[in-house]
Amino acid sequence: MGFLMGAYGKLMAGQRMRSIQFRLTTIQSQLRRVTREIGDKEKLYAAQERNMRSQMQSQMQAAIYGYMGMNPAMAQMNMNNPAYFQQNMDMTQYAQFAQMVQMQFSGAQTLWQNVFEMQKTADLNALKDLEDELQIEKDSLESQLKIAQADYEANKDMEKQGAQNLKPDYTGQA
Image (cartoon, rainbow, N blue to C red; front, top):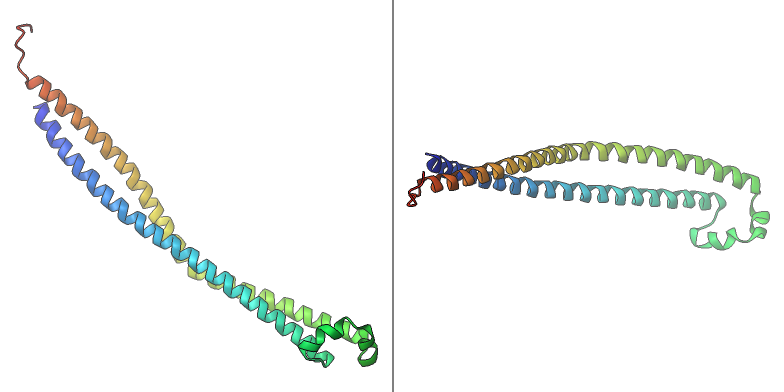
């Protein structure tokens, strides 16, 4: 009887192992896809944020140069020339305007950074939750697979012992 129970148990444990392995492969594939999508979206948001910061920086410089009555191409040359400031404007006015523009830039930068952070959080939370769920399911399937493998080995040993008991003993010893 042990032989038949072991053989049937081994058959069922093998089927369960293959079923778990198939589900595990599917979950691992989904997990890789979700992880890749999260990484891609984080890169996209980082690039958008850098681009916005760069645009805001150039707008700030353009505002300062415009206040000074310069086009941006001539600005760098004139910024290094102290005689230009003495002829065309009061340095205190320039400093006050530059400080005001810098404060506005800092406020706008903080606002946009918060907007990007909220958008990123809202967009990525669902994906990160899905990633966590898939990771938990993957861990569960891996532990189920170990249990099924142990069950398979136990039934295999039971089948082997049962086969030993079915073998006739011709030695005459009991």
